[in-house]
Image 1 (cartoon, rainbow, N blue to C red):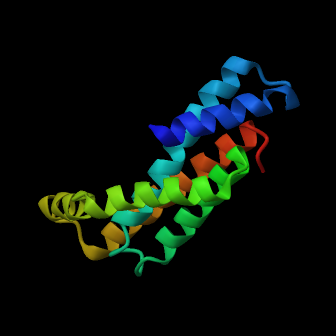
Image 2 (image 1 turned 180 degrees about the vertical axis):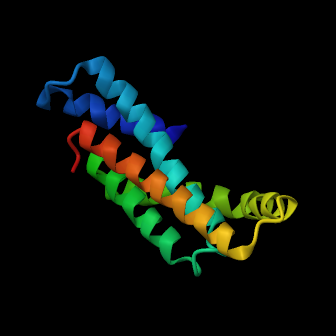
Image 3 (image 1 turned 30 degrees about the vertical axis):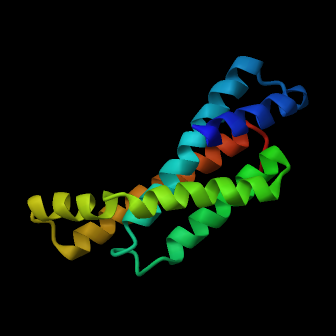
Length: 136
């Protein structure tokens, strides 16, 4: 929630720099906050199927960079993303995903494919929303 509010504040400050309406920027800022979280989450829960934490670390770095770009405060970005990471680590999302895959009797190769698709989609969504906000 704090992440979305902070992104929203940053975007409101940037509103004068585009032809997109203020309402669209606010909507896209909220969507961007969710997309950042989805990207980090999908990469975190799929680490067992994507060869370790490499993809997650890249998603975390991107989230920190985006947040820092919007707010202009790298320290706040690092602390906010760290808080999100702690929430991910304390969740059972990775175990829940494995249970769902097991319940579906999904072979390992298909699990990898699902995770690749899920993480690619969340990354693409983040990029599109950044472009809509003029952040690329």
